[in-house]
Length: 468
Ligand SMILES: Cc1ncc(COP(=O)(O)O)c(C=O)c1O
Image (cartoon, rainbow, N blue to C red; front, side, top):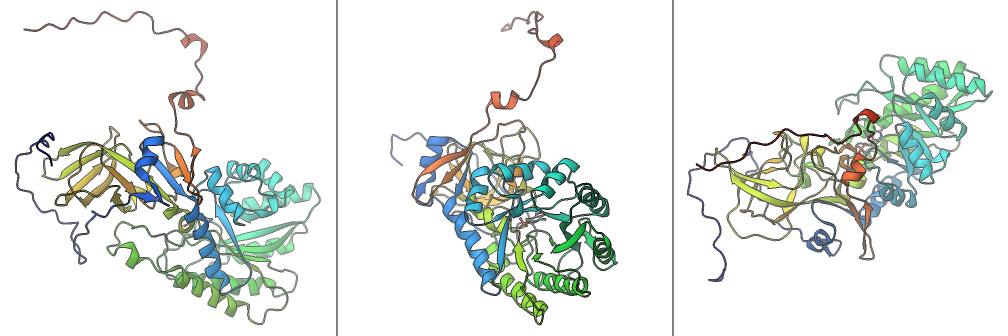
């Protein structure tokens, strides 16, 4: 510090109580590591150009992730396809990159289906999941030969009616749910295996002159930390496949194991850091591959495609959120409070994960327990409840990574406008892939009824301020 530098603001010394809850058997985690660049481009330069807060996506990382996942599975089984889960991140450029990598589209709504088609994905490369597929989009998907994953009996009946109306035989896939014993079972989507629902649905399809069962699908959940869940999943699916194929009238062309592989994020309540808590992707691939090869052994004819629908493991660590400190305060309980320009409305996953957060530039000073608040005038706007950071000042920047999964789709325009998303490409260039919101883009869908068209008119006069 030079003699001419302004003095930092003085704070009276105070005794800080120790808060239990951050202490665990691994001790405190320090967060004074810095993260200055993304794919060789200084984050500070990007913020100068595009502003803060800012979502930064790495094209290189995205391509690397999807190739690594596919390759891990292909090491065990040759016929593998990735279906890109649009709900995980529906930004057009991100979807396009994944389609360039050969990923199909996995969609769960009418608008997602339409978006996939707009992005040039042919119907027969779309996996159509979800519990609600309105009739017009079902008709279109059937006409375009999309892969329809049936969720419930009413949907089955509707597909059959459409097929009958067009005098067609429609290939369909059954979504299954079951208990692997390694994860909390989800029973709300698809047909249950244990109670016979799935069997009944398969019989119903077999008896229909307008439907043919060609695929089986299931999705265990998300951020699954036990790879054995996938081995069990595949075994249950191949057992069911044998059952439905038994009489020779049905032939399954693909087994779709859904998504759920974790990213290197920190789920709240899991004490070990992601590097220790999250198994390697090859462990998941080994489980899937071993169970699949066992399940298919002795099965004659061409073997089914293995489809996986990873979202989180593909995109999460390909995106970061940069935020800038806009204020600091000492909270009454002694903790340091830091106000950032990015709030929980941009990183909704902060409600379930402790996203690793790092300084963009290293900072001197003893780390202390800090609460990271967002800019919203709402009590819930906390980006991290407690993280150990060196003393921060206005203008310092932090980067949250990974944030690529489920934030650009679940974010809310709430109080603040949503910021831009940029893409850093492998040739060292960067581009906007989604503009930041503006007041006019926000108000564009609104309409003013004619009787409200006039300006407010007369305001009552203001009292004049006086000084005693
Ligand atoms: C049917 C289906 N497939 C794939 C995914 C992607 O899951 P993940 O991001 O955990 O890989 C989801 C997410 O909920 C899903 O519902």
